[in-house]
Image (cartoon, rainbow over the protein chains, first blue to last red):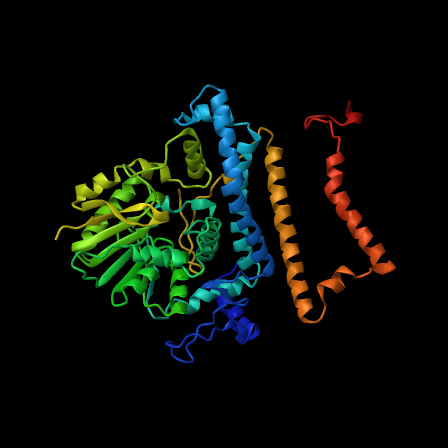
Length: 401
Length: 113
């Protein structure tokens, strides 16, 4: 097993072997002689470093094509077959049905089964491709790479190895191997995995365009004063960096429970020379002072936590916001928000997403009184804020001045 | 559950493993396995095809054109070597489809009966 000393021993040898080709030239604002060794043997596409090998890149390319086919032609055919089966059984496919009845009717259909099988396989194979390509191809060097960035700026990184990690955060969300807290390459796997997800949905994100757009849709307080911003559950910090670019003079923090995630995010921010701060902390226990931030934002955080934790996060956002500050949690539909038709097919798909894509808390999030709780802790809730997550209307909650 | 402390070299900690590898969508779980295998085969096929495209483009830059590749006439030695390789692939893919196993997993050996 690799340990820190092995990594640095390997790194010393690897530095000379990897040659200048792996060292980027674009560090204008970083002092000369202090340039980190950026392991980037195959250059970049946009801001995304190419995967370590051509084979890994090609496998991911194929699987992205499969995702695209699955989400288009196969999903459409599957839906048609699903509805046909229900109709022939005397059910109205426009209405919802109990899951037991749905499984009884469609459980053995080859086409409907194929859609479920392919969705899982494409995701699992892609994740395995990412992990193996880093782990098996100069894995020691890739593991050591963040070490060089941990104490480097601009921006800071705070890691808390002794902190309590709640059980709900330990799941392999989206089937990601090791999840966000248990995989040494969690940041990279998440980055390449979500990039493929966006690409298959027709959203180019090689330059974090998606997150830049989201950041531009995060409302500022009515008085226009933005000195400090907090991104809760920031993952690899794509929104965090987007918010900093949107508010250059503000002090911006990204916090997440997953150390491998924020280490990767910090590394990217340093590479981009963006001055943001990352800390391994919980969104429900940020440890920031009362009335500290002008904006608190998050992106697809709440549906990855149980309702109780979600309520605690809302209360914490209220505590750390200054009067007049705004809370903008961008996420899936939840209690009362407009949702797509609740018919049998969508219920079936939601179940598969929850159970097999390991969206452990998504149904609980969907059913909770999200907006009611925001009002209960004191927020003024505007449920028709700027459009954000795939053009869905987003909530903006203001702490009364 | 008893949780392990954070690994100081990677800052990782214990996670709760998904059981997704146990799900089967078809009545016969072997069909699930075959679909997975086909997807894996497609992934490797495209990986090899894409590498060939890269090689052809690089060769083109070195003066080896598409026409030269298309009109390349294999030598007798090439033919013999490639035919062996081709037949190995044919057997590997098509051979299992001819299998006519009819023993249940609990079947005894014939000479034990």
